[in-house]
Each structure stands twice: as C-alpha cells, then as structure tokens.
Amino acid sequence: MHDFYSQFPDDFLWGCALAAHQCEGAWNEGGKGISTADVARLGGIGKARQLDDSVLPHVHYPSHLGIDFYHQWPQDVKLLAEMGLKCLRLSMDWTRIYPKGIEASPNPEGLKYYHALFDALLAHHIEPIITISHFEIPLFLAQNYGAWKNREMIDFYLHYCQTLFTEFKGQVTRWLTFNEINHNENTSEAAMASAYRVSGIRYDRGENISQIAAQSSYYMMLATAKVVKLAHDIDPQNQVGCVLALHPSYAFDCQPETALKSLQCLESDLYIADTLCRGNFPDYKRRQLAKRGLTLDIQPEDECAFQQGKLDFVAFNYYSSTVCMLDESQYPQGNHFKGGKNPKLPETKWGWQIDPTGLRYALNLFDRRYQLPILITENGIGLEEKLSGIEPIEDDQRIAYLKAHLQALKQALIEDQVHCIGYCLWSCFDVISATTGEMRKRYGLIYVDQDDEGKGTLRRCPKKSAQWYAQIIKENGKNL
Ligand code: BG6
Image (cartoon, rainbow, N blue to C red; front, side, top):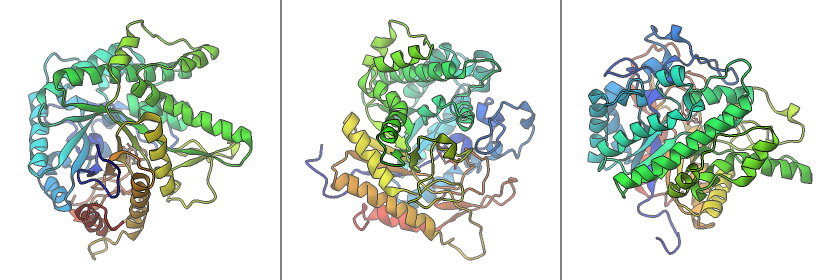
C-alpha cells in the first residue's frame, strides 16, 4: 500500500482494451462455435437487435471478420509492445473454449490459441487482464436455455470459468466476469438492444421485460459471486472484478426533485456494484421490486454465495456523463446513454458528450463507496478518420480527449487520493463498433485499413496518438 500518491505509482497499469468479437474475426475457425455476437443483426443505436441466422453465410459480416486479430496477433502484439503497454484487457470468446457451452471437455484449439497469445504478451511484459464474457455467449445457450433468463446458465458459466482458471493458472491472475453488467436492466428500447448484446437475452412478445431484466441481472451477479470464490479456490493469486458502464447523471437544474431523481438514477446502476462488493443483495432492492409486483427467484443458499464471493477490485468503463431531467421527453431519442444533453459540454458525432471531470467524479464515487482498488477498463473517443497517404494520421482530437481524461485521473489520484491501479484505453486498434457494427467509428491508436463493407488491406498504421501514449507510459504520466 502507498502512503499517499504524489505521482502515478511505479506499478500503474497503463493499458488498452479489446473485445474478442470486435477484433478476432475467424468466427468459424479453430473449432469455434457460433456466438450470439456472430448472429446479432446490427441495427445501430436504438434499434433492437435480434438473432438472425441469415447473416451466418456472410463471411464479411462485420463481426465475422473483425480486424483479423485471430491471425494477425503476433504482429499486433509487437505493435503493442512498441508502445510499452503494461497490460492488455481483452476478452476470451466462450465459443472458442466451449462451442455450444455444454460440452464436457474444452476445445483444444481454442485453448492453444489463447495460451500462445498470452505467452506472447507476457514475453513482452504485457499483463493479460481477461474479460470472461464481453457481449457474447454461445448461441446454443441463448436458443435452448434463454440465456441469462435461466438459472442453469450459472452452472454452464462456472464450468467455463473452471476451465479458464485451471488452464491459464500462472498466465492470468486478473479476471473480469462480465462487461457492463448493468446494461441489462434499463428497459428503454435502446437498452433492450443492449440486453441482447450484453447477455444474449431476447424478449418474446408478452413477456414481462422488467421481471426478466431484474432476474437476469440477479443471475449474472450470483454467477459473478460464485466465480470469485472458484477463482480464489483454484489459485489464491487470482483477483476478480466485474465491469460497470458508468455515466454519472448530473441534475439538470437545482430543483430538489431533480437532484433526488438523479441520485435514484445513479443508484439503479450502483446497486449491482453494491451487491458484488458488499456481499449481499440489498433489501431495499428486494422491496422495490416487490412493490412493482416483481418477485425474483432467490434461493436461501444464494446469501452465502454473495458473502463468500466479494469482488477483489472494482472496474468501470467511462465515456461520458449525462444529465437527469424531470421531463424525460427532452431526452434525445435512441441515444446510447439514457439522459438529456448537457449544454456545457461538447459532443462527438455520435452524440457522446465529452466530460473529463466526469471521470474524476466516477473515481471519487467508487473509491469512497467501495474502498477497493479501481481499474478503469475503458475510455476513449470514436472519430471518423481516413488514410490520406500522409502518415501518421494526425488524430489531435483523440490526443486532446485522452490528455484531458488522464489529467482528470491524475487529479483524482493526487488531489483526491483515489486508489486507481490502472487505465485501459479503448482501444489500441480500430475495431468493429459494438453499437453500430461499423468500422467507421474508430477508437484506435492504430488505424486498421478496412471499411464498413469489410474491404481494405487490414494494414495496421499507428496514428499520432500511439506515439503520444507511448511517451505518456514511458514518463509514467509525469508530464500530464
Ligand atoms: C463499450 C463497450 O460500451 O463501448 C465496447 O464495452 C464498445 O465493446 C465501446 O466498443 C464503444 O462503443 P461503440 O459502440 O462506439 O463501439
């Protein structure tokens, strides 16, 4: 433990983040099964996604191709090493290990691929931090078991995790159970699309959406708690976290009612982190659900599982803040974040508002509330960029965004003494956008020559921001 922070600590984890289905491609190679991400009909923000088997024959369907990381990772890892990364947060694709999710033994080719990748990262002193399920599950489990609607999913997930913890013992010690676990519950149209994306849940006509959303979140939390215990039992070195999507919701005006609503809005996300960090499903949540006529399947033994499986660290993705208004009709339609526009903030082409102070706010909130180490698992900006013949691409707008956010992080560390252990930038490479399925929404420090139709050489071209980030890492953030 550090006495206090006067600088970034020497062991600060400067990193980047990736997700398997957005970068790997090779959707039907190496013994891989079909995942929900392979058949998600991408309709852009606000349009509910559906399972659509008709996309299967399309080799150039965006997530089928990714950026071909599955084949190009040896060169890609070298590029990451040149930047001096200390960690890479990446997800494993469940269907590479268990193609249907129900097999007794794992797919050896899938294990081999990840072993080789992790070995290469470690050889370059880059720690792999693994997301166990990032917006995908085996399609078989979605179609035959209803995904996370079903308690049986917990056992399938534990079986998968047991394999990971046993196989990759010694190579991986930091694990994240789910990406953005809190997306599940928001039942706006845009968020229902997210529910499919996050947990493979499809709402059928006549189903009680609120009931299913709350129940599936409960099962995912319970799965997380059980996985924490399993991870510790297999290797006491293991550290487990779970990622929340965090977008602070500021009160739009100083009316006390708006302040109250904004607090309640934040709490509706934080109750998940509360459960996982404190080791019990809050009574107020149970009462709130009961008041709405919703009864969850909660078994007596669950209480013990939550108690025994408290998280080792907390993690969140931060891109933007929102504002809370009493009159929700003023909220822009179809936005990824539920909330109104903040007139004080600029925004990206996709309407994501840029708010570095929001990152400091989020860090303070988590630090004071949970008193656990914090890992920032994603932060970055989507921009439209093109190769023009002059390289590197001068992505000054990205550098400005990252610099402002890292300065806010440094203030949180030094002025507020927040215990933040690392920062994973989204992303090292341009990848397929999770919400739009496009390539044109580019987040990478390294450009990838591919367009929305899957055309291009896939050549990797480091942008100006890649050199900039390498320098920040080299100086350990001293000149921020
Ligand atoms: C995060 C996800 O919510 O946002 C990533 O964890 C995603 O998977 C990132 O790519 C950016 O979103 P998008 O839709 O612009 O790619």
